[in-house]
Length: 498
Image (cartoon, rainbow, N blue to C red; front, side, top):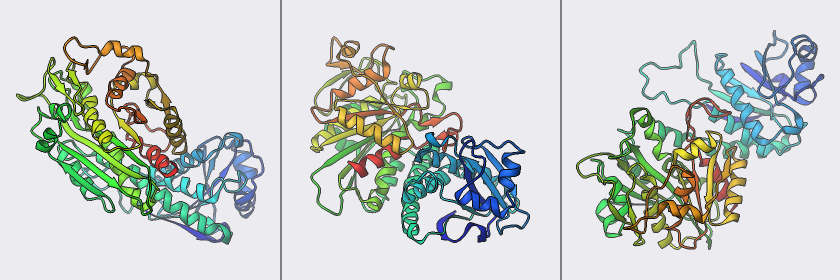
Protein backbone atom coordinates (compact mmCIF):
# COMPACT_ATOMS: atom_id res chain seq x y z
CA UNK A 1 0.00 0.00 0.00
CA UNK A 2 1.41 3.36 -1.08
CA UNK A 3 0.85 6.18 1.42
CA UNK A 4 1.40 9.78 0.39
CA UNK A 5 0.00 13.31 0.64
CA UNK A 6 -2.15 14.83 -2.12
CA UNK A 7 -2.67 18.56 -2.42
CA UNK A 8 -6.26 19.02 -3.53
CA UNK A 9 -9.74 20.03 -2.50
CA UNK A 10 -11.74 17.21 -0.90
CA UNK A 11 -14.72 17.93 -3.10
CA UNK A 12 -12.61 17.47 -6.24
CA UNK A 13 -10.74 14.27 -5.45
CA UNK A 14 -11.68 10.94 -6.99
CA UNK A 15 -11.30 7.78 -4.89
CA UNK A 16 -13.20 4.71 -3.75
CA UNK A 17 -13.56 5.85 -0.13
CA UNK A 18 -13.05 9.28 1.44
CA UNK A 19 -12.62 9.32 5.24
CA UNK A 20 -13.92 12.30 7.23
CA UNK A 21 -14.51 12.72 10.97
CA UNK A 22 -16.76 14.17 13.61
CA UNK A 23 -16.34 14.88 17.31
CA UNK A 24 -18.96 13.50 19.67
CA UNK A 25 -22.30 15.37 19.84
CA UNK A 26 -21.48 17.65 16.91
CA UNK A 27 -24.73 18.70 15.22
CA UNK A 28 -23.41 20.79 12.33
CA UNK A 29 -20.02 19.66 10.94
CA UNK A 30 -17.34 22.26 10.36
CA UNK A 31 -13.98 22.30 8.61
CA UNK A 32 -13.25 19.60 6.04
CA UNK A 33 -16.20 17.45 7.12
CA UNK A 34 -18.42 20.53 6.83
CA UNK A 35 -17.28 21.04 3.23
CA UNK A 36 -18.24 17.46 2.37
CA UNK A 37 -21.56 17.89 4.18
CA UNK A 38 -22.37 20.92 2.02
CA UNK A 39 -21.32 19.12 -1.17
CA UNK A 40 -23.65 16.24 -0.22
CA UNK A 41 -26.59 18.63 0.31
CA UNK A 42 -26.26 18.45 4.12
CA UNK A 43 -26.69 14.67 4.15
CA UNK A 44 -24.36 14.30 7.15
CA UNK A 45 -26.14 16.86 9.35
CA UNK A 46 -29.76 16.40 8.29
CA UNK A 47 -29.78 12.63 7.77
CA UNK A 48 -26.80 10.80 9.31
CA UNK A 49 -26.78 12.87 12.52
CA UNK A 50 -30.41 13.97 12.85
CA UNK A 51 -32.24 10.93 11.45
CA UNK A 52 -29.79 8.04 11.91
CA UNK A 53 -28.55 9.18 15.31
CA UNK A 54 -24.81 9.25 14.57
CA UNK A 55 -23.21 10.55 17.78
CA UNK A 56 -19.52 10.72 16.85
CA UNK A 57 -18.43 8.36 19.61
CA UNK A 58 -14.85 7.13 19.32
CA UNK A 59 -14.54 4.69 16.38
CA UNK A 60 -18.26 4.96 15.48
CA UNK A 61 -18.64 4.43 11.73
CA UNK A 62 -21.14 5.36 9.04
CA UNK A 63 -20.84 4.75 5.30
CA UNK A 64 -22.41 7.35 3.04
CA UNK A 65 -22.92 6.79 -0.72
CA UNK A 66 -22.27 10.03 -2.62
CA UNK A 67 -24.53 9.38 -5.64
CA UNK A 68 -22.13 11.28 -7.90
CA UNK A 69 -22.38 14.57 -6.00
CA UNK A 70 -18.61 14.46 -5.44
CA UNK A 71 -16.01 12.36 -7.30
CA UNK A 72 -15.43 10.06 -4.30
CA UNK A 73 -17.60 6.95 -4.52
CA UNK A 74 -18.27 6.62 -0.76
CA UNK A 75 -17.66 8.69 2.34
CA UNK A 76 -16.70 6.95 5.57
CA UNK A 77 -17.63 9.06 8.59
CA UNK A 78 -15.77 8.14 11.76
CA UNK A 79 -16.27 9.40 15.30
CA UNK A 80 -13.39 10.97 17.20
CA UNK A 81 -15.06 10.82 20.61
CA UNK A 82 -15.20 13.75 23.02
CA UNK A 83 -13.06 16.69 21.96
CA UNK A 84 -11.67 17.13 25.49
CA UNK A 85 -10.38 13.53 25.44
CA UNK A 86 -8.83 13.74 21.97
CA UNK A 87 -5.12 13.01 21.56
CA UNK A 88 -2.56 11.89 19.01
CA UNK A 89 -2.97 8.31 20.21
CA UNK A 90 -6.68 8.54 19.37
CA UNK A 91 -5.74 9.48 15.80
CA UNK A 92 -3.70 6.28 15.47
CA UNK A 93 -6.58 4.23 16.84
CA UNK A 94 -9.19 5.90 14.61
CA UNK A 95 -7.03 5.40 11.51
CA UNK A 96 -6.73 1.68 12.25
CA UNK A 97 -10.49 1.35 12.76
CA UNK A 98 -11.12 3.12 9.47
CA UNK A 99 -8.71 0.99 7.43
CA UNK A 100 -10.17 -2.26 8.78
CA UNK A 101 -13.65 -1.15 7.75
CA UNK A 102 -12.43 0.01 4.36
CA UNK A 103 -10.91 -3.42 3.68
CA UNK A 104 -14.44 -4.84 3.75
CA UNK A 105 -15.59 -2.27 1.17
CA UNK A 106 -13.34 -3.69 -1.58
CA UNK A 107 -11.61 -0.35 -2.08
CA UNK A 108 -8.34 0.10 -3.92
CA UNK A 109 -7.91 3.87 -3.55
CA UNK A 110 -8.53 5.58 -0.20
CA UNK A 111 -8.29 9.25 0.75
CA UNK A 112 -8.55 10.80 4.20
CA UNK A 113 -8.63 14.21 5.79
CA UNK A 114 -5.90 15.05 8.29
CA UNK A 115 -7.55 14.02 11.57
CA UNK A 116 -6.74 16.43 14.39
CA UNK A 117 -5.11 19.23 12.40
CA UNK A 118 -8.31 21.26 12.03
CA UNK A 119 -10.56 21.99 14.99
CA UNK A 120 -8.26 20.09 17.39
CA UNK A 121 -5.32 22.27 16.32
CA UNK A 122 -2.67 19.56 16.43
CA UNK A 123 0.60 19.65 14.48
CA UNK A 124 0.17 18.37 10.87
CA UNK A 125 3.44 16.40 11.14
CA UNK A 126 2.24 14.52 14.22
CA UNK A 127 -1.24 13.95 12.80
CA UNK A 128 0.16 12.53 9.56
CA UNK A 129 2.51 10.27 11.51
CA UNK A 130 -0.35 8.90 13.63
CA UNK A 131 -2.63 8.33 10.62
CA UNK A 132 0.18 6.48 8.88
CA UNK A 133 1.03 4.35 11.91
CA UNK A 134 -2.62 3.46 12.49
CA UNK A 135 -3.20 2.61 8.85
CA UNK A 136 -0.16 0.33 8.60
CA UNK A 137 -0.61 -1.32 12.00
CA UNK A 138 -4.35 -1.78 11.44
CA UNK A 139 -3.73 -3.38 8.04
CA UNK A 140 -1.29 -5.98 9.39
CA UNK A 141 -1.82 -9.64 8.64
CA UNK A 142 0.47 -12.67 8.57
CA UNK A 143 -0.75 -14.98 5.82
CA UNK A 144 2.60 -16.29 4.56
CA UNK A 145 1.71 -19.92 5.22
CA UNK A 146 -1.87 -19.88 3.91
CA UNK A 147 -2.31 -21.89 0.72
CA UNK A 148 -4.93 -19.53 -0.74
CA UNK A 149 -4.34 -15.83 -1.32
CA UNK A 150 -6.73 -13.55 0.54
CA UNK A 151 -6.57 -10.82 -2.11
CA UNK A 152 -8.65 -11.49 -5.24
CA UNK A 153 -10.51 -9.38 -7.79
CA UNK A 154 -13.56 -9.63 -5.52
CA UNK A 155 -11.50 -8.81 -2.42
CA UNK A 156 -8.69 -6.51 -3.61
CA UNK A 157 -5.74 -5.10 -1.71
CA UNK A 158 -5.77 -1.38 -0.94
CA UNK A 159 -3.21 0.03 -3.36
CA UNK A 160 -3.18 3.76 -2.68
CA UNK A 161 -3.81 5.72 0.52
CA UNK A 162 -3.64 9.51 0.36
CA UNK A 163 -3.86 12.21 3.01
CA UNK A 164 -5.59 15.14 1.33
CA UNK A 165 -4.60 18.70 2.22
CA UNK A 166 -5.28 21.94 0.37
CA UNK A 167 -2.90 24.29 2.21
CA UNK A 168 0.57 24.40 0.65
CA UNK A 169 2.22 25.34 3.96
CA UNK A 170 1.28 21.97 5.51
CA UNK A 171 2.38 19.65 2.69
CA UNK A 172 6.05 19.32 3.69
CA UNK A 173 5.21 18.54 7.32
CA UNK A 174 2.67 15.93 6.26
CA UNK A 175 5.20 14.26 3.95
CA UNK A 176 7.74 14.04 6.78
CA UNK A 177 5.11 12.76 9.19
CA UNK A 178 4.13 10.03 6.74
CA UNK A 179 7.77 9.02 6.35
CA UNK A 180 8.36 8.73 10.10
CA UNK A 181 5.07 6.90 10.61
CA UNK A 182 5.98 4.38 7.93
CA UNK A 183 9.40 3.72 9.46
CA UNK A 184 8.04 3.13 12.98
CA UNK A 185 4.96 1.13 11.97
CA UNK A 186 6.91 -1.06 9.55
CA UNK A 187 9.46 -1.78 12.29
CA UNK A 188 6.64 -2.81 14.63
CA UNK A 189 5.26 -5.11 11.93
CA UNK A 190 8.77 -6.47 11.31
CA UNK A 191 8.87 -7.54 14.95
CA UNK A 192 5.39 -9.07 14.60
CA UNK A 193 6.55 -11.03 11.55
CA UNK A 194 9.54 -12.47 13.42
CA UNK A 195 7.32 -13.56 16.31
CA UNK A 196 4.65 -15.00 14.00
CA UNK A 197 7.13 -17.26 12.23
CA UNK A 198 7.17 -20.90 13.43
CA UNK A 199 9.89 -21.77 15.95
CA UNK A 200 11.30 -24.29 13.49
CA UNK A 201 12.04 -21.32 11.20
CA UNK A 202 13.10 -18.59 13.62
CA UNK A 203 15.83 -20.45 15.47
CA UNK A 204 18.75 -18.74 17.24
CA UNK A 205 20.71 -19.09 14.00
CA UNK A 206 17.92 -17.41 12.01
CA UNK A 207 17.71 -14.54 14.48
CA UNK A 208 21.45 -14.04 14.07
CA UNK A 209 21.09 -14.04 10.28
CA UNK A 210 18.31 -11.46 10.46
CA UNK A 211 20.45 -9.22 12.65
CA UNK A 212 23.43 -9.58 10.31
CA UNK A 213 21.29 -8.56 7.32
CA UNK A 214 20.44 -5.14 8.76
CA UNK A 215 22.08 -2.30 6.83
CA UNK A 216 23.78 0.60 8.54
CA UNK A 217 24.76 -1.15 11.78
CA UNK A 218 27.63 -3.33 12.94
CA UNK A 219 26.81 -6.88 13.98
CA UNK A 220 28.94 -9.51 15.72
CA UNK A 221 27.77 -13.04 16.49
CA UNK A 222 29.39 -14.73 19.48
CA UNK A 223 29.28 -18.51 19.08
CA UNK A 224 28.94 -21.04 21.90
CA UNK A 225 32.67 -21.66 22.35
CA UNK A 226 33.49 -17.97 22.65
CA UNK A 227 30.53 -17.40 24.97
CA UNK A 228 31.89 -20.12 27.23
CA UNK A 229 35.32 -18.44 27.24
CA UNK A 230 33.64 -15.18 28.22
CA UNK A 231 32.10 -16.95 31.20
CA UNK A 232 28.47 -16.89 30.08
CA UNK A 233 27.63 -19.92 32.19
CA UNK A 234 23.99 -19.01 32.81
CA UNK A 235 23.14 -18.39 29.13
CA UNK A 236 24.97 -21.48 27.87
CA UNK A 237 23.31 -23.69 30.50
CA UNK A 238 19.84 -22.79 29.23
CA UNK A 239 20.88 -23.67 25.67
CA UNK A 240 22.31 -27.12 26.53
CA UNK A 241 19.12 -29.15 26.06
CA UNK A 242 18.56 -28.00 22.47
CA UNK A 243 20.04 -29.28 19.23
CA UNK A 244 20.00 -25.66 18.03
CA UNK A 245 23.29 -23.86 18.76
CA UNK A 246 23.01 -20.67 20.85
CA UNK A 247 23.97 -17.33 19.34
CA UNK A 248 24.88 -14.20 21.26
CA UNK A 249 24.05 -11.25 19.02
CA UNK A 250 25.75 -7.87 19.44
CA UNK A 251 24.48 -5.07 17.17
CA UNK A 252 25.89 -1.54 17.26
CA UNK A 253 24.40 1.67 15.88
CA UNK A 254 26.75 4.64 15.81
CA UNK A 255 25.28 8.09 15.03
CA UNK A 256 26.73 10.20 12.25
CA UNK A 257 27.75 12.86 14.75
CA UNK A 258 29.96 12.09 17.72
CA UNK A 259 28.11 11.39 20.96
CA UNK A 260 29.21 10.74 24.53
CA UNK A 261 26.20 8.61 25.54
CA UNK A 262 25.97 4.84 25.06
CA UNK A 263 22.83 2.82 25.74
CA UNK A 264 22.37 -0.94 25.72
CA UNK A 265 18.98 -2.40 24.82
CA UNK A 266 18.72 -6.10 25.60
CA UNK A 267 15.99 -8.41 24.31
CA UNK A 268 15.17 -11.84 25.67
CA UNK A 269 15.77 -14.23 22.77
CA UNK A 270 14.43 -17.65 23.79
CA UNK A 271 13.12 -18.73 20.38
CA UNK A 272 11.11 -21.55 21.91
CA UNK A 273 10.51 -22.23 25.58
CA UNK A 274 9.34 -25.72 26.48
CA UNK A 275 10.19 -25.09 30.12
CA UNK A 276 13.18 -27.42 29.92
CA UNK A 277 13.17 -30.38 32.32
CA UNK A 278 10.56 -28.52 34.40
CA UNK A 279 8.44 -28.87 31.30
CA UNK A 280 5.35 -26.79 30.71
CA UNK A 281 1.91 -28.39 30.28
CA UNK A 282 0.70 -28.48 26.67
CA UNK A 283 -1.70 -25.58 27.13
CA UNK A 284 1.11 -23.37 28.44
CA UNK A 285 3.54 -24.36 25.69
CA UNK A 286 1.33 -23.06 22.87
CA UNK A 287 2.60 -19.68 21.62
CA UNK A 288 5.97 -20.13 23.33
CA UNK A 289 7.49 -19.09 20.04
CA UNK A 290 6.73 -15.60 21.37
CA UNK A 291 9.38 -15.92 24.09
CA UNK A 292 11.72 -14.04 21.78
CA UNK A 293 9.40 -11.01 21.57
CA UNK A 294 11.96 -8.90 23.42
CA UNK A 295 14.63 -9.89 20.92
CA UNK A 296 12.27 -9.13 18.04
CA UNK A 297 11.66 -5.66 19.47
CA UNK A 298 15.38 -4.96 19.86
CA UNK A 299 16.24 -6.21 16.36
CA UNK A 300 13.38 -4.20 14.86
CA UNK A 301 14.50 -1.06 16.68
CA UNK A 302 18.11 -1.52 15.56
CA UNK A 303 16.91 -1.94 11.97
CA UNK A 304 15.53 1.61 11.79
CA UNK A 305 18.07 3.58 13.82
CA UNK A 306 20.14 4.39 10.70
CA UNK A 307 16.99 5.89 9.12
CA UNK A 308 15.99 7.97 12.14
CA UNK A 309 19.55 8.84 13.25
CA UNK A 310 19.14 9.40 16.99
CA UNK A 311 22.15 11.08 18.59
CA UNK A 312 23.12 8.22 20.88
CA UNK A 313 25.26 5.11 20.43
CA UNK A 314 23.07 2.04 20.83
CA UNK A 315 24.17 -1.53 21.54
CA UNK A 316 21.48 -4.11 20.82
CA UNK A 317 22.10 -7.40 22.62
CA UNK A 318 20.30 -10.74 22.29
CA UNK A 319 21.28 -14.01 23.97
CA UNK A 320 19.43 -16.31 21.56
CA UNK A 321 18.75 -19.94 22.40
CA UNK A 322 16.02 -22.53 22.94
CA UNK A 323 15.00 -23.95 26.32
CA UNK A 324 14.45 -27.65 25.68
CA UNK A 325 14.58 -30.92 27.63
CA UNK A 326 17.25 -33.39 26.57
CA UNK A 327 20.14 -35.52 27.70
CA UNK A 328 22.38 -32.48 28.07
CA UNK A 329 19.76 -30.13 29.52
CA UNK A 330 20.49 -28.17 32.65
CA UNK A 331 18.74 -29.48 35.72
CA UNK A 332 17.08 -28.30 38.90
CA UNK A 333 19.74 -28.14 41.64
CA UNK A 334 22.52 -27.28 39.17
CA UNK A 335 24.84 -24.43 40.18
CA UNK A 336 25.61 -21.97 37.39
CA UNK A 337 28.20 -19.21 37.27
CA UNK A 338 27.27 -16.02 35.43
CA UNK A 339 29.69 -13.79 33.56
CA UNK A 340 30.26 -11.57 36.61
CA UNK A 341 31.22 -14.57 38.76
CA UNK A 342 28.01 -14.77 40.77
CA UNK A 343 26.61 -18.26 41.32
CA UNK A 344 23.01 -19.32 40.81
CA UNK A 345 21.20 -22.37 42.14
CA UNK A 346 18.66 -23.62 39.61
CA UNK A 347 15.32 -23.83 41.38
CA UNK A 348 13.27 -24.10 38.20
CA UNK A 349 14.44 -24.62 34.61
CA UNK A 350 11.38 -22.71 33.38
CA UNK A 351 12.79 -19.54 34.94
CA UNK A 352 15.32 -19.48 32.11
CA UNK A 353 14.85 -16.03 30.61
CA UNK A 354 16.42 -14.28 33.57
CA UNK A 355 19.48 -16.54 33.23
CA UNK A 356 20.02 -15.54 29.60
CA UNK A 357 19.42 -11.88 30.46
CA UNK A 358 21.87 -12.07 33.38
CA UNK A 359 24.82 -12.77 31.10
CA UNK A 360 23.60 -10.25 28.53
CA UNK A 361 23.44 -7.58 31.24
CA UNK A 362 26.95 -8.51 32.43
CA UNK A 363 28.16 -8.15 28.84
CA UNK A 364 26.54 -4.70 28.63
CA UNK A 365 28.19 -3.65 31.91
CA UNK A 366 31.57 -4.57 30.42
CA UNK A 367 30.81 -2.32 27.44
CA UNK A 368 30.73 0.59 29.93
CA UNK A 369 27.38 1.84 28.67
CA UNK A 370 25.57 4.71 30.39
CA UNK A 371 22.19 2.99 30.58
CA UNK A 372 20.82 -0.54 30.27
CA UNK A 373 17.25 -1.33 29.21
CA UNK A 374 16.16 -4.94 29.02
CA UNK A 375 12.85 -6.07 27.55
CA UNK A 376 11.47 -9.57 27.95
CA UNK A 377 8.43 -11.82 28.13
CA UNK A 378 9.74 -12.76 31.53
CA UNK A 379 6.98 -13.73 33.94
CA UNK A 380 3.44 -15.02 33.87
CA UNK A 381 3.08 -13.10 37.13
CA UNK A 382 3.27 -9.81 35.22
CA UNK A 383 0.49 -10.98 32.89
CA UNK A 384 -1.64 -11.88 35.91
CA UNK A 385 -0.93 -8.53 37.58
CA UNK A 386 -1.44 -6.20 34.63
CA UNK A 387 -3.25 -8.22 31.98
CA UNK A 388 -2.54 -7.47 28.33
CA UNK A 389 -3.11 -3.73 28.60
CA UNK A 390 0.31 -2.84 30.01
CA UNK A 391 3.88 -3.98 30.47
CA UNK A 392 5.56 -3.87 33.85
CA UNK A 393 8.59 -1.66 34.36
CA UNK A 394 11.05 -1.60 37.25
CA UNK A 395 14.63 -0.54 37.78
CA UNK A 396 17.22 1.31 39.83
CA UNK A 397 16.86 4.79 38.33
CA UNK A 398 13.58 6.70 38.61
CA UNK A 399 14.42 9.28 35.93
CA UNK A 400 15.04 6.51 33.42
CA UNK A 401 11.80 4.78 34.40
CA UNK A 402 9.83 8.04 34.11
CA UNK A 403 11.27 8.82 30.68
CA UNK A 404 10.45 5.34 29.40
CA UNK A 405 6.88 5.61 30.71
CA UNK A 406 6.56 8.93 28.87
CA UNK A 407 8.03 7.39 25.70
CA UNK A 408 5.55 4.52 25.90
CA UNK A 409 2.66 6.96 26.17
CA UNK A 410 3.83 8.82 23.06
CA UNK A 411 3.94 5.53 21.18
CA UNK A 412 0.50 4.37 22.28
CA UNK A 413 1.91 1.74 24.66
CA UNK A 414 1.57 1.49 28.43
CA UNK A 415 4.11 0.84 31.17
CA UNK A 416 3.19 0.41 34.84
CA UNK A 417 5.89 0.62 37.49
CA UNK A 418 6.33 -2.34 39.83
CA UNK A 419 8.43 -2.25 43.04
CA UNK A 420 11.85 -3.73 43.70
CA UNK A 421 11.74 -3.94 47.48
CA UNK A 422 14.88 -5.29 49.14
CA UNK A 423 12.70 -7.71 51.10
CA UNK A 424 12.02 -9.63 47.89
CA UNK A 425 15.63 -10.84 47.99
CA UNK A 426 14.68 -13.18 50.83
CA UNK A 427 12.74 -15.43 48.44
CA UNK A 428 15.86 -15.94 46.29
CA UNK A 429 18.20 -16.99 49.10
CA UNK A 430 20.18 -20.18 48.51
CA UNK A 431 22.15 -22.16 51.12
CA UNK A 432 24.71 -23.31 48.55
CA UNK A 433 24.97 -20.47 45.99
CA UNK A 434 24.73 -16.69 45.90
CA UNK A 435 21.02 -16.95 45.12
CA UNK A 436 18.38 -19.05 43.34
CA UNK A 437 16.89 -18.30 39.93
CA UNK A 438 13.33 -18.49 41.24
CA UNK A 439 11.55 -17.78 44.49
CA UNK A 440 8.01 -18.10 45.79
CA UNK A 441 4.89 -17.49 43.71
CA UNK A 442 4.38 -14.14 45.44
CA UNK A 443 5.44 -10.96 43.61
CA UNK A 444 6.85 -13.05 40.77
CA UNK A 445 7.45 -10.16 38.37
CA UNK A 446 9.29 -8.13 41.00
CA UNK A 447 11.41 -11.03 42.25
CA UNK A 448 12.52 -11.61 38.66
CA UNK A 449 13.54 -7.96 38.56
CA UNK A 450 15.38 -8.32 41.87
CA UNK A 451 17.30 -11.24 40.35
CA UNK A 452 18.35 -9.17 37.32
CA UNK A 453 19.38 -6.26 39.52
CA UNK A 454 22.21 -8.45 40.86
CA UNK A 455 24.03 -8.08 37.52
CA UNK A 456 23.75 -4.37 36.66
CA UNK A 457 26.32 -2.91 39.09
CA UNK A 458 25.58 0.81 39.53
CA UNK A 459 24.57 1.52 35.94
CA UNK A 460 21.10 3.10 35.49
CA UNK A 461 18.91 0.16 34.45
CA UNK A 462 15.30 -0.70 33.76
CA UNK A 463 13.60 -4.01 33.13
CA UNK A 464 10.43 -4.07 31.00
CA UNK A 465 8.29 -7.21 31.32
CA UNK A 466 6.13 -7.50 28.18
CA UNK A 467 4.62 -10.90 29.05
CA UNK A 468 1.11 -9.41 28.87
CA UNK A 469 0.90 -7.32 25.68
CA UNK A 470 3.45 -9.28 23.62
CA UNK A 471 0.80 -11.76 22.43
CA UNK A 472 -2.77 -10.44 22.29
CA UNK A 473 -5.74 -12.76 22.62
CA UNK A 474 -8.05 -10.30 20.85
CA UNK A 475 -7.93 -7.09 18.82
CA UNK A 476 -6.93 -4.11 20.96
CA UNK A 477 -7.01 -0.64 19.40
CA UNK A 478 -4.66 -0.57 16.38
CA UNK A 479 -3.33 -4.08 17.01
CA UNK A 480 -4.91 -7.32 15.84
CA UNK A 481 -4.98 -10.60 17.74
CA UNK A 482 -1.53 -12.22 17.93
CA UNK A 483 1.97 -10.71 18.28
CA UNK A 484 1.90 -6.98 18.92
CA UNK A 485 5.52 -5.89 18.53
CA UNK A 486 5.37 -4.67 22.13
CA UNK A 487 8.15 -2.29 23.09
CA UNK A 488 9.24 -1.20 19.61
CA UNK A 489 7.52 2.19 19.73
CA UNK A 490 8.51 2.77 23.36
CA UNK A 491 12.20 2.13 22.70
CA UNK A 492 12.26 4.19 19.49
CA UNK A 493 10.62 7.19 21.13
CA UNK A 494 13.01 6.97 24.05
CA UNK A 495 16.13 6.77 21.88
CA UNK A 496 14.96 9.69 19.73
CA UNK A 497 14.44 11.92 22.76
CA UNK A 498 17.12 10.80 25.21
